[in-house]
Image: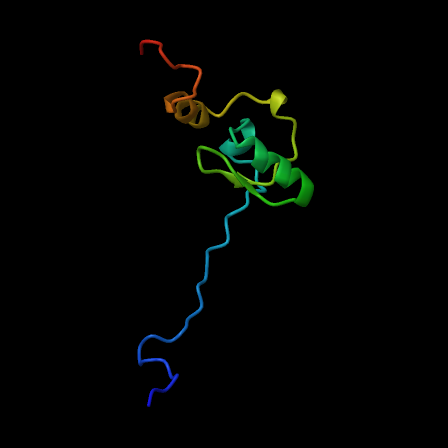
Length: 91
């Protein structure tokens, strides 16, 4: 006769995911426009969820990115990707 009791040591637990550090300060990352997936930008605009840039910055976009220079780290990562502007050029 079998029982439906779980085996010892295999109980359930709570998975706690870290909350992203949302930037609200005026640090170096605030001085740049960052690369983010377009669909993530649209979702953020609709529901206010934070986005993650290629460089790792997490924030809720609210400024016009055209007014700022591109983040050098985002640009470097983007250009190293297969679809970047630097594709096929000698370095």
